[in-house]
Image (cartoon, rainbow, N blue to C red):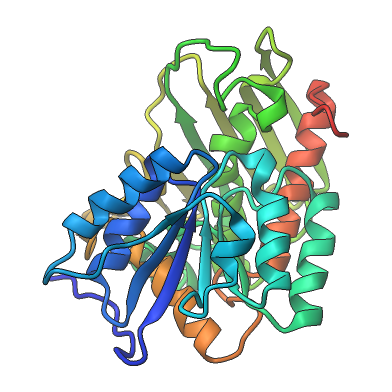
Length: 350
């Protein structure tokens, strides 16, 4: 049976939520149910939308909580003394500016993936976090899911033998809407930044568990389909790490896939059969042995692990998490830069 992470309950850690969109509701739910923290303010450029979000989560509070304020000005939200950390869930193109403002204000930052749209944009933000001694983490919730603790044990124990390769997919069919965050280059749209970041960050994670570290790919090949707006609508890519070890993945907005993750070893394989980025199930298949099936339910909705990690690290005065490090973010962004370059995808500011 799953249990909630144990976070100190006093003093309460206040979160400013920046960008009250769909995914932000998941964050707010987890914060409401985790001990030792609360939603202090909601910030959005559309004040009416921000107020509706704040009102909803004020009503959801149990026991009744003070009204959560909404505000349009980010600087004013960051100036509040009851704000200790900032969760950023705006469209990708606006991440960098919000992250920088929060770091300059001395507030811990948990920013939705991808941190920003390129490695070049991320480097000064990581440098600023380190210079100011302020916590910064890309919000890759997958790495903190309970099922991956089991997969980590299988990999570090060598249950499937030496690693041979990985395959994964993350695809769904999304209507083409040129002005949507998925397809608009001005919003840093594209399947790679929105979906492929999961395939790549978990590739890196698997290699770290199995090998002790993740080497840089010796070769990277990518192809796919561009949307009429010029962003990547579908991506196929292979990362060759040498010694016969490769990771293959596909991501896209224009079709379906099994959306699983498969990890191959010399003596067996591991399967995360569906929606690997929010998985609660894994399978271990070792040659000559009965399969091992593991169910690992979420304590709340899956966001609790990354949130609890951010609060623990911020309270301890750390600038990064060992589970989702700055180096991991920079490496994954570098891989995505290379893939976009091969596909001819450029954003207006590049």
